[in-house]
Length: 139
Length: 88
Image 1 (cartoon, rainbow over the protein chains, first blue to last red):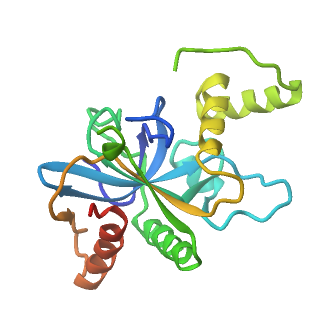
Image 2 (image 1 turned 180 degrees about the vertical axis):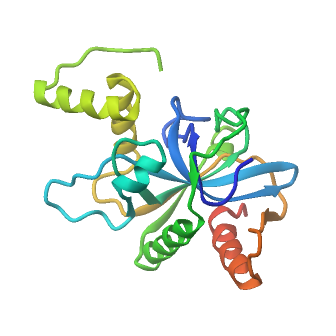
Image 3 (image 1 turned 180 degrees about the horizontal axis):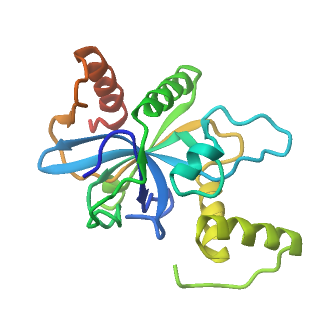
């Protein structure tokens, strides 16, 4: 079962290719729900890039510090990317650990609120909303 | 994904990539491919929110409510995601 605030492994898709991505990557689950008969999860991408060579951290990135990252089983701090969000079917194609008893690495629903607020700020600041619609692309 | 080719990169870059790949538990090939594919998703300077939608279904999109979540919070985030993932 997935819940809002769970950090889980996900084959997060790419813009340039169809279907799930090739390898599992930690994402932050922002919501779950249902449309028609399909159960879905809405997830934010994460990135391990934390060094910007003296430049300011891009505003779409929210830091998960080393202590919190360690609780997730990660060896280093990472960022949640408020500018990459996906709505994905809850299947093992996208969430490879679904069949296991414990899916989530850990849970932090309050952090989701911060990421959502940051995304609202980005949109208000003029970030363009770019749909990467796999369903339409394949028809 | 199995169609591989060989490129030459500076040793220090390869070493840094190997170190970071090990931290993430992936191979150097996977790490570099992932990094480049993500960078290809936007042109330089593009400021965008990329919204990937892989749900092939229509109808009313209903979010699950958090335990104890109040109506205002639920309505606020429902509106956010309805706006992002609406299929016109």
